[in-house]
Length: 365
Image (cartoon, rainbow, N blue to C red; front, side):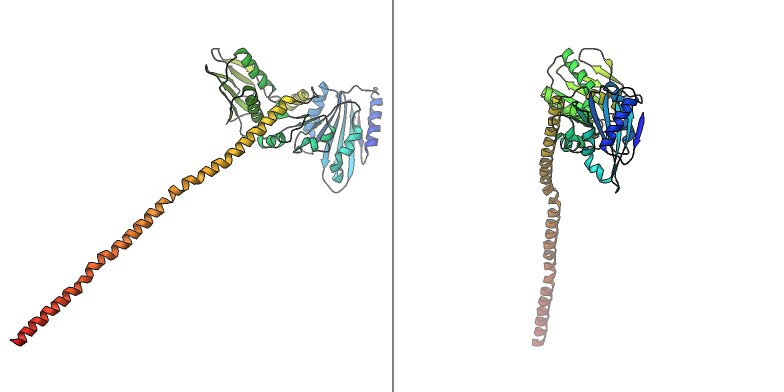
């Protein structure tokens, strides 16, 4: 059942939900949470489809907050009950200044005595816990599209925050832990290869550094996503390599190569996994702190490299000094060559004197 409301209020939306439940023949529906999805016009359709599919595993009231910029202030809504989903869906279109007060619209529509999950499928605030809508949630889920976004959000991580870039690592972390259980060895170093700017790769490197206590190097590959993870031991590498995004080659020293399923999961599966737990993810918080520490080390190494760079410049300036010295030497030697030419007049004067003497002698004679 679908009920459309134009220029409405939160009270009218609540009444429409009650009418829709009664019309469906179930005045009381068992829902386990309220999921608030904050999106825009571009991500609205995909966010609706993903949240609806995730709601089949976790029946909930889904509130889609769609911001529409403009001068006109208003609130339009669409209530969906049934429609193939075991819960309720309310689409809220916030026009103009109302979009800046989304928390006031969402608050009256939250289910009582149930946890609240806030998900930003696209652009998310830098500090999710301090966002007006984010403050309403027990859990806050973002999706960092790049390592730079992840670093900014990791600096402001609060209990209850999570990122789908971390959820994408569940299978990777399980395989790596199983590899060390099967082949317990002292790890000397580790390497993670992924496409440039991968947020998941940065989180995995931080997690491995925390768990193994060894330096982990990031290497750029062609993707998709993470393509290779290697843990170096004295006997060889424990490696998991995935080139096609579906199957991975699993290598352990002294054992034959095996293939394991390691596909790239869609957003619906990632979101459903995050909704299975409402308590804070302490392991993610530790990994996020490791991301911040790696970023701090990289920033500290930057000024050191730039400070060392000018030391090589004086060697390049020696060439002009040699040229100037050569020019001075040439300039000083040139007058020295001209000085012997000035002695010619002296010969002329001597010749004149001899001429005078001869003439004098002739006169005397």
